[in-house]
Every structure is written in C-alpha cells, then in structure tokens.
Length: 400
Image (cartoon, rainbow, N blue to C red; front, side):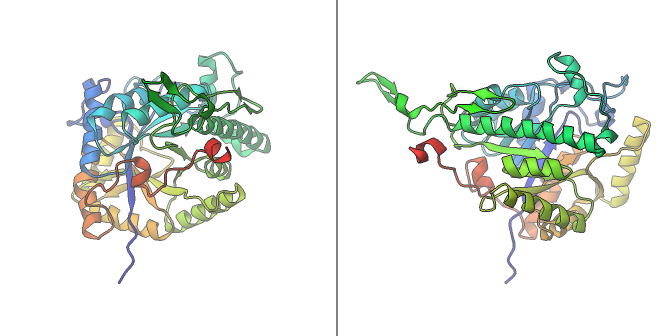
C-alpha cells in the first residue's frame, strides 16, 4: 500500500489579488476592500475548502512596484487595513481555519506584537499565528527613528549589503524570541479565579523574562495570560540563506519560493541544515512552497486571463514566487511532485479574488481529496492541531 502523506494548504490574501490589475476584473469588489465583510467572506471561502490557514498581507508603507520607495501609480490598489485587526474581526465569524496576519518587526515593539497575537489566539480559540516580516528600508522615513538606508535591492548582493542584511535579520530573530518568551511569561495555571478566597492569580507563576540584547531590553511579564495554543505559530517568508537562517531559528513554518522540484529539494536541504545548526533538529519546521496561481478550466483559459490582466496593467506580471497558469488538476500534479521533493505544504497566492480563490477551494481541493492527499473534514480545533504540532511546554514552568 502506498504511504500517502497529508498535504497542508494555505492561501495568502492580499487586497483584490496578487496581480496588480486584479481589482479591475468583472467579479472583483474594489468598493468592499476596506470592509470587514469582504475579509469575512474570503475567510469563509477558505474555510469551506478546509484549508489549514489564511495569511493576510500587511506593511507599514503603501504598496509599490518599487523596492526603494513609493511609486506614482494611480491605477493599482493602494492602501490596506491592519492585518492583525482584520484577523481579530473575522475570528468570531469562523470556526476552524487558522488566521495568520502579517506584523512587521522593524518599527514595532515585540511586547505589542506578543500581546496582539495572544489576544487573537484567545478570540479564535487557538487558531492564531503570526507572519513576521521586516520593513522595507525606505519605510524608515515614515517613522523618523532610524536613518534611511541607501541600499537598493541589488546592493544586498555585495559583502557590505550581506552584513547589513544579516544585522537586520539578527534583530528580527531577537524580536521573535522576545515575543515567544512573553507568551510563556504566564504559566498555564497562573489564573486561580477563586472568588471565595479572593485570589485571581498566582503571582509566583508570572515570570520576568529579563531579555537583554543588542536591540531590546524587555523585563516582562506580558499583560496577557499564556495563549490557548501556548505558542501561536510563527511563520516567515524566506528567499536565501540569511532569511532561511532566521526562519530556522525562530519559526514553525517557512515559506519558500522554488522554481521547480529540484530547486525545492535544494532549498529544503539548506533549511534543514540551518535548522540543525540552530539546535532545532528535533523540532517540526514545516517548509511551504509559495506559488502565484491563475486557474481556469483549461490551461489556455488561464493563460489568456493572465495575458488580459497583464495588458490592463501595462506590463507583464512578475513575482518572487513561481507563477502558475493552468488547471486545478495540473496544479495538483505540481504540488504532489514538489511534496515528494520535501515540502510539507503550500501557500497559494490567488492572482485575482474571488475567482482564483474559489478555484482553489472548489476545484483544487477536490482534486487533492480524490487522490487521498487532503483532508475531507477538519479533525483538529487549533492551528497547531491542523499542522500536527504539539502544544509546547512552558519554558518557565519546566525550569521551575
């Protein structure tokens, strides 16, 4: 009998879709982009497809076609709602799907992010995660607390650029560590809630984390009790060695961008080597492949739709991830091929919403189910449960 491994599947939601002209599609809803109902509908559709989780894109600066600053375009979606607040709003309207908003690490404080994601975990009854993201250098000018970086994207390939990049990711790693320690700063049974004795908490089970590093000095404890999952999921997108190292040190899921099965195999090997070097070889670290998807009833239909969107945008769409245009059956073939290369799941980026999202939930998912590679119902109640991750012990309770 063939051993069929379950495939994990998520979708990355960004405005009207990942193609910059998606908002102009006939079935798009640009007038609803800044409403809670819009995001609730997308989450409900993803949950209908039994997906593991959704991620919600965010940034501190306006969307831009340029890496080094805002662009002057007025024909593309600009502006967005706060991802963590979106997730908190739609959490009570969903029952099973995981909610993983993006929150940047460069211009925020780990105490705030820790509290926000812990709160989301309570609101969702254990379905919260966090996508940790670094800000783009030009966003420094929006805050005035850091000097603007003179580095362009190509400059990061130089030795000096690599040192600056490593420095930024080291800061992000410390940020994530503070977040995790704050989640553990309350033991699970710290709340007594005994009205008869007048004791609400056991103060001995709240812990100072006393984190001292180059960028942060955080005493703690958090003001939010330990989240239902103990540790909500930490996830990160990575494209090269330095970000792989960051993800291997800090994350439960790393999203990667392979071009083919061979490339996927090489990326997985590098991530596993970094995971071992970080002392986490015995822990589960999921490696998800990212793809932008244009789906249709035929490969020709999908390609024609992409060409139409490219024409509306005035240029051919390019992405950091592989762009797939084809049928759901062809995409299922690709996903299973890449799974054999070592990936445990995929985060699909719908090119246009709602069309490509519905193709994922109503066409791709049944394809995978017929092949025995995807769930036919939810069997867990938490995001960690969906991904086969145990609830971790509290580091301070274990030490005590």
